[in-house]
Every structure is written in C-alpha cells, then in structure tokens.
Length: 102
Image (cartoon, rainbow, N blue to C red; front, side, top):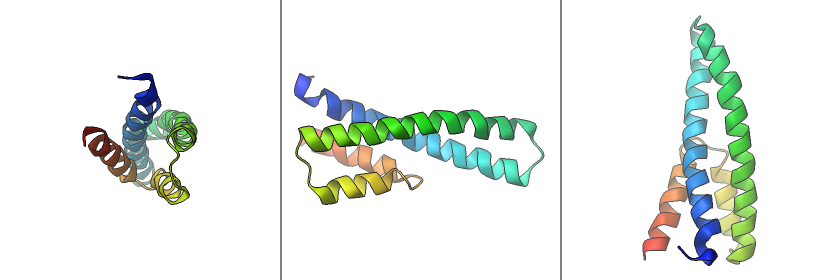
C-alpha cells in the first residue's frame, strides 16, 4: 500500500467500523427502551462513547481525504450524511473499495 492511499484505507476501515457501531448502538437503544435488561443501559453508554469517537475519526478522515484526493463538495456532503444514517457507512466503504479495485 502506497503512502498516497493510506488515508483512504483508514477512512474505508473507519467507515465500516463506525457503521457497525451505529447498528450496535441502535440495537442497544431499542433494547434499553423495550426491555428491563440493565446491560442494555450499559451498552448504550459504552457503545455510545465508542461510536462518538469513531464518528469523530470518520469526519476527520473524511476531511483529510477530501483535501488529499480533491473530492468534490457533493461527494463529501454525501459521505458526511452517510455517517448520520444507520447502514449508510457500509455503502461508503463498499464504494471506496470498488473504486480502489477498478
């Protein structure tokens, strides 16, 4: 992997993990509100913290990629909005992986 693609590789990986953390967080949130499981509350707390850190990393790496690879504002906006929707970061990761292999 060249130095030029390391930031993109990190962004792809963070997009995947951030997407997973959002799905897990939403799952714990639903369980917290619909069950009496005490561990669901802890899940929301700790997965929420992890998700927050991953979100910050996602946005930071998105900014780095936009600058380094001269992405258009529309692409950056779509990728940012994807970070706010469950499952959407998976599509970002897949699109970037497909572009890397083409």
